[in-house]
Amino acid sequence: MVVLSSFPPPAEGIKLVQPNTGAFINTRDLGQGTLYIAESRVSWVSTLSGQGFSLEYPHISLHAVSKDPAAFPQECLYLMLDSRLDEPDEVLENDDSGDEESTSEMSEVRFIPEDRGTLDAMYHAMTVCQTLHPDPNDSVSDDTEEGEYCLDAGESADNDHDNGETENMESDMGQFEDADPEH
Amino acid sequence: MTSLSTARDRYNAANSLLCLLQALEGRVTVIELQNEIAVKGLISQVDGFMNVSLHDATVQGNDDMHYHFEEFFVKARNIRYVQIPEDVRLFHTKQSLHNFIMLICLHVD
Image 1 (cartoon, rainbow over the protein chains, first blue to last red):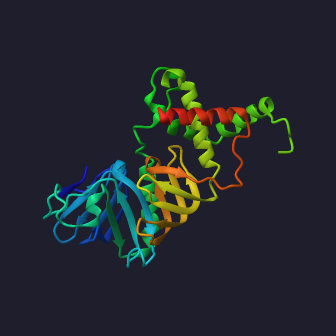
Image 2 (image 1 turned 45 degrees about the horizontal axis):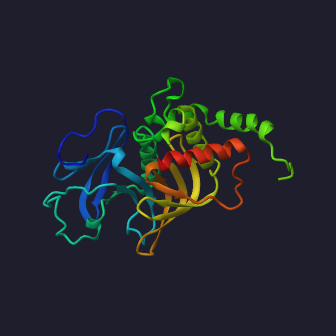
Image 3 (image 1 turned 120 degrees about the horizontal axis):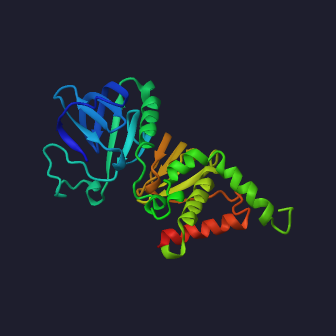
């Protein structure tokens, strides 16, 4: 899931590489490094130590462009994770840090590019990559009894959501029109 | 409840909910996340997996502080509620109401 170690950055499916990017995990400043947004994962490698971490999309609950100084003093890409990150020098199990985050399974990661203008590109790269990792627990895809309708909500909607939506409504309206056409 | 619903029902139900969400593109709504954080913003896009992209989002955290985000993307599984604006008409047809009820039943199951 999340690894803090020396490892090579992703080699394939890279959507964006952003050098001179700072990283924060919760309140911890990890310094400057290079951010890699790839189809498989988000990785950040410290310029100084060569160490870094990887985040997998199923564990990234949300991401956002943050320019509000009340939220964080620097403009950054904000990520909320659904689990705690193990950081160097800290033991994952214990809550002895007294960190308010320790009571919930959640972490916050911020990437601060030196070039603020790239924030939108970073956000969009992550958005694109997130659509490649749909939730495997989607209720429609659970059912595999009938092949004809065994479609991911994503697949069906991707194919049909432009056509299917209007088709459904148009075919229904004639049959099920309300008695009062005014409303 | 699953024995009463066919794959077609589940497909139609999920598709209806997706269409409902996609009909909110361009509208300002409040989304409550599973962790009880509320996000208010303009829905810029809902993708086929019901992931939601918001523009000009304000997050109200547990601490009653408000934080603003220019762009905000949340994955479908993290969404608990989406508040529908009052003027949005739901259930034009009996079929769409049926689909919606089916979806509720599926999720309760």
